Every structure is written in C-alpha cells, then in structure tokens.
Length: 78
Picture 1 (cartoon, helix red, strand yellow):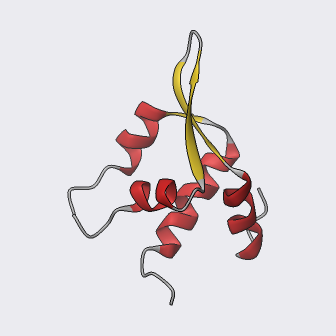
Picture 2: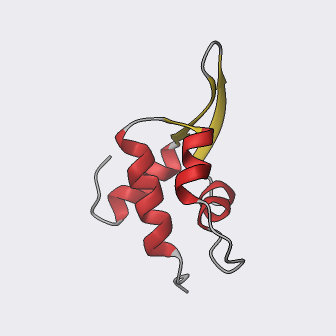
C-alpha cells in the first residue's frame, strides 16, 4: 500500500540529497502543525535520512543508502 505522504517524503529526501542540510534548516523548512503530515518523521522512520553530529557545525542531515535507493526507484537519481 502506498502512503499518501510518499510524494512529500520523496521531495524531502530529494531536497536533502542535493546537499546535506543542517538539522535546524530541515526542521524549519519542513515543519508542519498538521499531525497527519509527518513527513520528517516518516523519512527518518523509514531510514531514508539520518542525523549526524559534525564537529564545529552541529547536527547535519544526510540521506542514507536506503534514501538513495528510494530516489532511484522513483526516477529521481541522487
């Protein structure tokens, strides 16, 4: 079954694939007050993106191998 949020999760993963983003930027850009739109949480839960601490920079978000596969499966090469 395809989740109705899949297109937005795909957009988020593609956006992060262009360049690793600071966690604060991701949350600011993808924040929503709608409890039904859990795009960030869905991407993390599915293992498409991961947070990593980078000395001197802070927490950065990058796509994972699963995220790259997700993009390829949907015709969006990372």
